[in-house]
Structure formats: structure tokens, C-alpha cells
Length: 407
Image 1 (cartoon, rainbow, N blue to C red):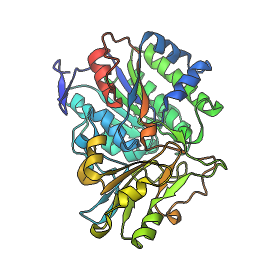
Image 2: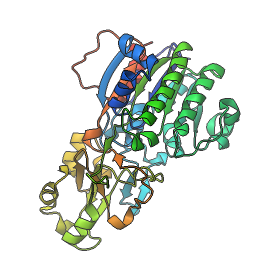
Image 3: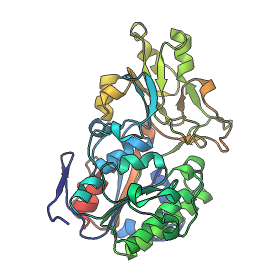
Image 4: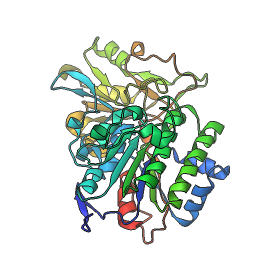
């Protein structure tokens, strides 16, 4: 392994001297940890908070999975790496598509650079939608819990994952999908001793259970146990999240939704404007494709006054034109619409009401995407002296802290 730092997207990273694990806990509103620790469910992390480094950071907006995971592994915002949602409108093909293909990625990852420098790198993520992006041009192990039974040496750098982990393939809508990641990470730490691991979970539990809920506490107790074992194996651990999570329902517990496409069809005429919801992915049972961030493509003759009209709606926090939104939220301007709309903390944005199947929402809706879900934990299991606590910390500082300050 090289002794020289690697430079990725304008930032320098030392190579790990001890096994290093960066963990992204999907949907981890800081209160989940605070209440689990207060309730005695996370004794290991309680010790880390006392003796290690504990910060609260900002994720990137939109506060969704793909933009933030790619920000964490590139050390840069979406304006650099290009992934501005789980889903986008592609004007070149006049189609709406998932942003799972690495062709959308505009920047290299820290993971690939470390592997190229000789580090033994492993990535385990929950859903296969992220695997190809996280593992782009990376030599090493990269697989998802969802497709763990199908992992091959050729495609994933490893086979026999189920035998290694000792668990069956979990249901995609379960806490076990995330537990499998930690079980796999711990087995890899002992069996393969990777220099660098990135572990990224799913937010199924956080969509369904509020901080302090017994099911949420059980999830964080599980997480605490695996982190303790990784620490005992000598790992440097940095833990952060891709976004927070908030309740998004009315007093009667029904989803608190503003259906933007319905409104624009009424104001401008049917199908003249196009609403894109970047939260959209194939896994909609727990959120119904409803989040607190949307982007709108307007017809040239219908743009005047639309921002003001949308801002006047109850439940709307921000409406920004393209260039202003790109500057404020560090987004690629060519991949967002004419307007960006952000809803208030307890409100979500929909397309047309007929396009959302909410019949499978078993519990009152919890979701994310807006500025209200921007605060996330940033925790390292080592004390780091001299940090500027007054600066704005970002979740994509995790690799910098883990590699440059905590070794």
C-alpha cells in the first residue's frame, strides 16, 4: 500500500494505518441516537460520545439516499459528483429515470482512489440500487444485502457471502436488511482484514418508527453491539447519516401531502408542467414516493408568477429558481428543473394524487428530503484534538476525519 496521500475532488486523504470503517446509517435523525443512549440501549456509543468525537453535521439537499451516499464517498457535494437525487428527468431522452447507473457520476470516489493506491477496500450496502455507484471503478469487495446470494468474485469481488455471514438473504423491507450489513462487515473485518470499509444501511425502520420507539431502540441496540465488536477488533469508526427523518402526517394521521402536479395541471392545463420527485425509487412501501423536495419543469409561456403562487401555499418552505437553488444547495444546475420546491417539516410533496399508492403505508407517514432533515450525526470513535467546532461540518467530512485525523 502506498504511503503517499491520495487526492480526490480537491481533498487529500491519508491511507489507513488501522482498519477503518465509515458507516452511513440511513435516516438517522440525531434524536434516534440521543434517545437510545439515554434509555441505556447503546452503552458502547455512550462511551464513544464521552471519549471520542461527537459532532452534528449537515447532509446535502435534497436529503435523499443517493445524493448523500455519493457525497460521503466523494467528499464533495452534488455540484461536483452530479448525483442530485434517486431519480431525475433526462431532457436528452425526454424520459424520467433512476440515477443508479454510474454514467450519471461525474467525479471519482475516495474508495476507488484508496483501492488504486493499494488499500484493501470493501463496501456493503443494503439495496442494490446503490451498489454500482458506490463501487464504480473500485477494485475490491462490493455487494448489497439485497443481492448477497448472487455475489460473485467477478462482479462483486467475493462469493459465498451467505456462508460467510451465516444469515439468509433478508427481506428488503426489514431491519434485518441493515443487520446483514453489519454482520457481513464484522465477518469481513476478521476474515479479510480490509483496510477500508464503507457500510450503508436502509431507512426502513426510521420511516416507520420515531426516535425512542421500542422498535427503533432495538435497531440501535443492534447497531451498538456490532460497532462495539468492530472497535474491539481495532477499527477506527466514523458514523454519519445520509439524512434525518420527520413525521409527515395530519392530526388524523393521514399523509400531509401537497400534490404539485394536480395544482399545476389546474393552473396551466394538463401535462404542461412536469413535477419530478427525486425521492422516487423502486422501494415505495415505506414512503409512497413522497418526500419534502421536488423540482418542476415549466413551459416557457407558463413560468411567470409560478414561484410566487407556489410560495403562497400553506406548507411550502422554499421555492427557488434553478440557478439560485443550484447555488444554495450545491446542485448541478443542468439536472434540476426551472423551480425547486421544499416543503415544511411536517409536509411532503407529491406529483398527481393518482400516481401515489398509499395503500401499503401501515403507519403514519415519516419521510425526508427537505432542509428540516438536514441535521445528522458525525461521530468518530477516537478523540480528535483541535477541531473547529464553530465551522459547518458536513456528512461528507466523514472520510477526512477518519483518515486524516483519527488514525
